[in-house]
Structures are given as C-alpha cells and as structure tokens.
Length: 168
Ligand code: ATP
Image (cartoon, rainbow, N blue to C red):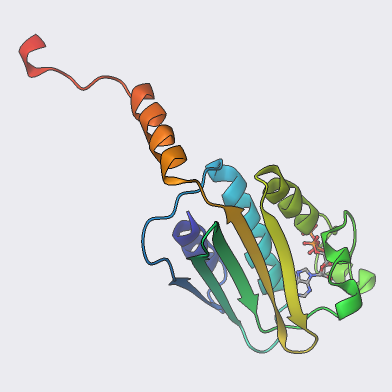
C-alpha cells in the first residue's frame, strides 16, 4: 500500500523526488482497511508537497519496533514552530491562515489522519524544526503471531473453495 501511494504521489508531483525506504527486517503484521491507510498517507505526502520550499524531496519509510509497525513521512520544507506542533492535529487548525488558504487547505487533513490512526489504537505525531522540515511519524500496534495466524485463517476461510479438477 505504501509503495503504491508513494508511486502515485510521485507521478502526480514529477518535480518532487519521493523515496520509499523499507526498514522492515522480516514480516510484521498490522490490520486495517486499505483505504484508511491510503487516505492517511495521501494526507501526509500531500502536506509534505504543499509545505516544501526549494528542496523538493520527500522520504517515506516503513519500519518496526518490538510492538509497532512504524511509518514516517519526512519533508525539508517550512517546518512547524514547537508551540504549534500539537495544534496541527486539531480540526480546522492552520498555522498560517492566509497562506494556507492560498494553498487550498481547510485544516482538516491531519485531524482526519489522527482520527483514523486513533481508531486503530495507533499514534501519530510530528517532529519539526522551523525552516528545516518536518517528520510525521505513525506507530500502529503490531499483531501478535497468534493474532496474525487467526486473521490469516479467517481470511482463507472467506475465499471460495478451489475448483476440484475431478468435478469438471
Ligand atoms: P487540508 O484540510 O486540505 O489538509 P491543511 O493542509 O491546511 O488543509 P492539515 O493537513 O490539517 O490542513 O494541516 C494543518 C496545518 O498544519 C496546515 O495548515 C499547516 O500549517 C501545518 N502543516 C501540516 N503539514 C505540514 C508540513 N508537512 N510542514 C509544515 N506545516 C505543515
């Protein structure tokens, strides 16, 4: 999913270099609706594009800790002042109202992203240095191997039974 969204966003913004780093060193299981995760990634990459300046580079990464699968979207744009870093997740909050309006923002994207991530008991936060850029980080709780096996079992049970050549 991350690869697909990254590729799509790269096509839409050919003047940017959008890279994807896979830091996973083995399988890691998380469960979510595909369109929810696509939506979150589109919001973060779209913002990274909107708030970049001269350095048109965006780094996306996927990794994991012991208990989470982690996503990060980094830009090298205008950044966010420390006092505003928590507020950007509030509905209708825009750091620079006049300029954000010029860029077509409503101040809704990050609040939607946070609601979706909260729904999966994950976390989303930002580290940012004004003038240097921002990193938005998402951590989603990883399924235990037992939960992953159970999910796979139920998923397989939903599939139609394979055709038996003897019945043809
Ligand atoms: P939209 O509703 O279309 O997403 P928006 O970008 O204004 O519009 P949010 O995505 O919620 O809304 O972002 C809120 C505010 O946070 C933005 O107006 C901007 O000031 C700031 N912001 C968000 N992402 C970044 C970023 N990558 N770099 C710098 N500022 C950002």
